[in-house]
Image (tube, rainbow, N blue to C red; front, side, top):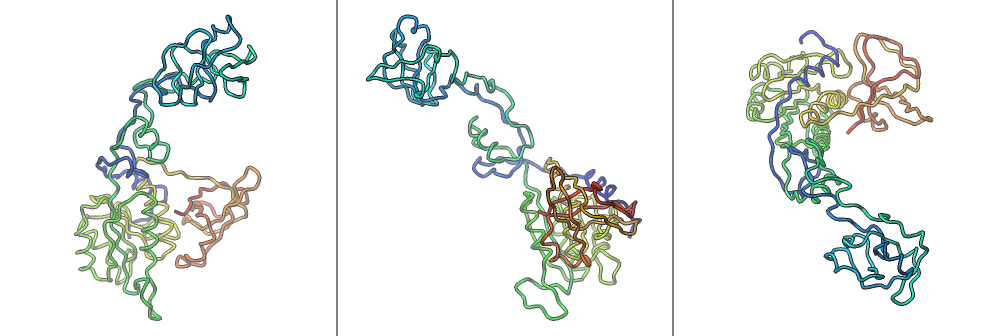
Length: 396
């Protein structure tokens, strides 16, 4: 194992070696959750016409100088083309969303008028020019930027795309990821394990997290503790955007991941981080990038969220949202390793408090179910009094 580096130094190395994803064009209805590879611009003014905003009547205010009572000339519904010019002293019964006739400048809702047969009256002061009219181009001019590059396609972006006629979208290709779990002691979840075996949990955890992050899982294999099988499996996926390996990265006699990846990609960018859990973490910046995570389930959870998640988000030009929380109670531990431990969040007034929930060891992942995520305490101090501000990362 190489000299240990700090968690922040490890993250800096990782984020400095991002491959470039290609792009593809897909139908709008399939684009939810994808990342735009192009901007969306207004293809015409928004709104494209003077839009009536209330059900009621519309007319020329100047006509009120001749008569306080107007005669309804007919209906003007949303979606109808502009009607013929009004005769003096007349108005249209108009619907929300209709285009305002070019010779009209005033809209009154039904609530402000009195109707008798085809005649309407209202207080003179109620007639205010421009009121209840959404002016053409008041939101955006033709050509205005509406959605920037690398925006995730959510319900709002989908609505804008449809509005400007973007029925297909140019998006980033999804990161193609292969997972290799290792260990002769591990069996599949559907298998009844012998007393000396454990069921596979890391694969299920990583699959769920990768789905949230928009990655495409191209393969998962569970590998025996055998260098030949590991080499063969990894070599078949050197065209992936990312390889994730779990286990086999420490110094044990049957830990073959480091020599196998070294033989294929050379020495790692780092191997060993001054942290617990997750000290044996290794990263290769080659093509493809490779994360070798420790095998214990909580080590996998922490190192994935601490390093792989920001890598995948940065790869797709997304920012990792890092929250700062206040410790609800004192924590003491021995340096020099940074310590990541599960925490439960609660609100107290304007302060977001974190109640730490230390685990007995890095295999005790089931006890973390009640936590919301984990906090990371730096390894250069040993005492953290209540109120200390620390970074918090939520579980996916």
